[in-house]
Image (cartoon, rainbow, N blue to C red; front, side):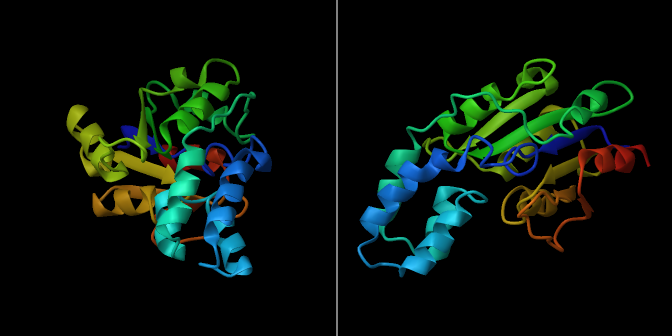
Length: 219
């Protein structure tokens, strides 16, 4: 029986670029100015597009950013926050139906810069404050020295709530982040195939909508 579901945020419950593509443009401009020929223009733009799907440190390592490029992007994105309301994907109200007996506890675990991710959580609201939909909300803040990892946060949830991996599901889009962390812990993983998300064989299940998740749990 599934007793808990751990959700990712970006490209799972809301599109990372929902606040508008201009949100990260100052970050991208700073990285472009610091590039100084490290990456060809086409390769650089590919790397910047990846920032909508992966954390900054992951993108920098994957695409070979120089220390100057990473520092420029890091310094800029750490100051950014969402100031306009967000609604998330259209199927988000399903979360309300998933709360409470006989359905499982819901957790939100999102990686990124503390101020930006916290502002997204606060900007998301439909029928009630988004924070109230979850038993706990955790931000794996990559800009804080005390950062652990998503896997460590998942393990803490298991330990704190005395859950076995068989009683939990991890729902998200990223095979290099939450899906990999869940897999390493023996937790069933569900990949949300939102627009722009590439299907990964790492996931135990694949869904297009949260309505499918509800049906999956009920089975």
